[in-house]
Image (cartoon, rainbow, N blue to C red; front, side, top):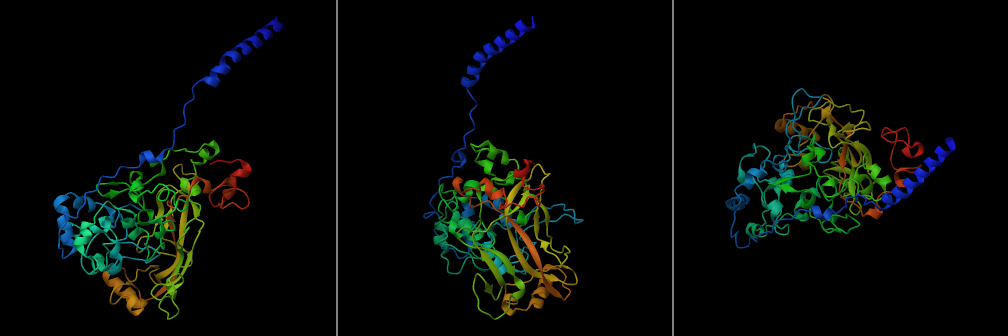
Length: 477
């Protein structure tokens, strides 16, 4: 009986195999979603030529703005709601302060030029407004203070000077007649040259991106993307917030690769598995400063000396620098926000580096991924008695760049900013991290397995929270 039963089972299995295997082979498979980023690129409105609309002459930038608002009356209110205008975030509750704080260029510091407060003469040449001076309360409610030209005029016809005013040599009528949809030229004038020059601040943004090859940046090179193809604007509010000048960023305000790409675009499923814990940028932006060098170190303590000057090594007004090309990023867990952002007046320990910002996330954070950053290290001034970082006045008739007197620079800063100065200062090391999202390479130049795994891999697995290289023990987060 058992023998006949076994034969029956074997026959049944064979019959089912004959029936089901062809069905499995020929049954229509669900197609993998196609990755077609071009399908998601926004259509830009057709621009209206303004040659016959902006007759001029115009005696000031404010007169140009008044003419713009005759046809675009809603634009001013829209611009005044953006951080391009306010230079300040909404209030945040941070664990180390009793009261809510705001963060932005208007009121906080970095470890490049340090502070815009009191230095409006030069810093405001990148603000989207006119006439922001040191000793006057800037009127953020006056629509005529908005500079429409900085984002819309042809950059060959327009440039800003001291206090954000147009350069005196500018023909404002010609500039107004040249207005257009923003291009990489408009965005790059401030974002490529942030921190005092080409490529200084952002290792992934520099002037070579005006006309890049596809090997420099596949989006702006091969695809000829504008900045606004990814940093999309709605009512003048532009997506893409930088955590350097923020604390927490609403994901709806951020730019993501998945705005255009499918979440798992690779044919190799082993690579797709990585997308749960590794950011796209980690593999596809293998190096920074590919063509133009970026600043990685700035020592303010050596400034003021009469010695040979060179843009890449030493300037009397700024001190000693280190620039580098083909910079390997630093890799940290990152969930899109900060764990800490130095707030003006925070106490420091000068015996150890002070974080100006610290990306949030760790191996246990389900929203965090391994992400590439540029690390900028500086030596900048601090108050030896009050034990906090100082924000000197550099620009202007009585600033440090005029008389090279640090003590005077801190005393007039106390008058303008209200940050008490004890009379004693020294210099301390600070660190600041800059997320890397540009200089995306063609797929064939992306990092390979051996770039991260193995004895010569670039990732510090222990620092990231792993008990060694996951390749050696098959571990996953």
